[in-house]
Length: 184
Image (cartoon, rainbow, N blue to C red; front, side, top):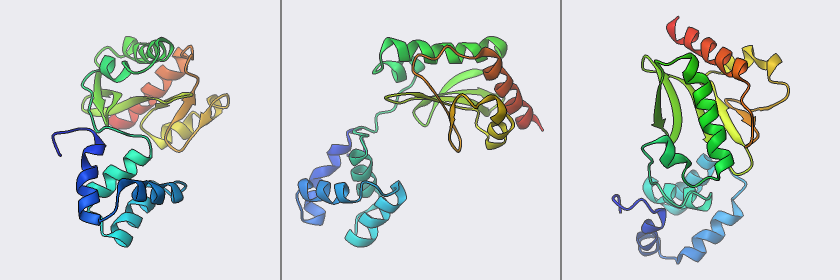
């Protein structure tokens, strides 16, 4: 199972070990769909004796992550998305790296990230209806709050439209603030 990235590859073992068909487990997951990830894991582990691996496979599958496949490049990450989303992500990354050419683009947590001197500086995540950008710091988000009033700001991310024309000054200023934070 470990070599197969499809989370459904765990299903035969789950059915055998826990004595119910997957439809039974999917029904349970539907009833607790509003709970947080850790609460869903605890439900399966504590109430039904699931191993961590089996609980994780079922919870993530139920949340829409059908595969644990890892990507190695930004283009591999962007392959499933439409041209608008791909262009926006490339523009965001280019806006920052053109100012900071020593930054390296890496894949971490299966998403594009920018690193400098071994420190994460900025990340991007594509979702169905928007793109999340992250300067890797709650302090940077707080510092830039007055400039983020046109965006939805979450605890660690900023939500931008999929067709966003990157605000170069904002992105570069946030990157500069994060870089300064990592060198203190």
